[in-house]
Image (cartoon, rainbow, N blue to C red; front, side):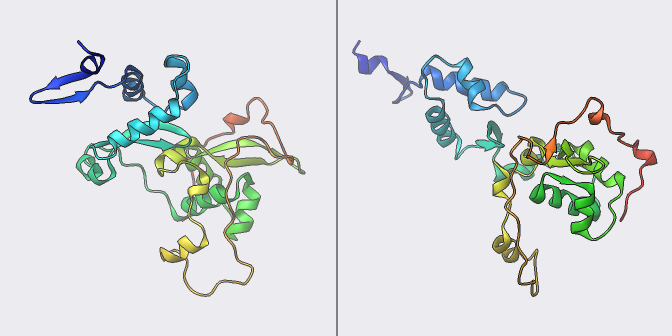
Length: 233
């Protein structure tokens, strides 16, 4: 049998090229993974010298028109239901608790201004932010404690998580809408101050010069039990 014939599989009256073994392995890894996988993790499971990025691009193209798509979220890869078919699974989806307006505003401030302290959040919002509001965001897994500000009182700084990016379908924080997009969507209306601007967000995990590492026990900073939590409206 010729080399060409060996590379083809007969399917009915048609024949198609046999898929590369590396592509099949990559597909299996992504299918079985409980969480999105980064390219380094995938490369460790593939034959040495394989161009992982090229294989991912090929697989993403193959799945583009299928009911399941290969997408990149927070710098990692995962298989997800095609967006136009998501409505079919709505009955099986877990419905998260609706966030209060205060929590939504706080989450937006953390996303765009991180690393940010509670006092800085309050300064931007113009109102006091209850501890319960931040506790809710920590419990959802969308906000995390980053470090402590090198300032009097050493306040904790907050930032977003990969869970935040995954939930909102973002590859990176830079995919958040800018001022023009916010205006176009109707989220910002009317005249704005001349010096108004929407900051360019950054999710660099490295601590800034004005931050220092968390101490043992900081990650247990008293998440108040739900029944005792007091939230603002």
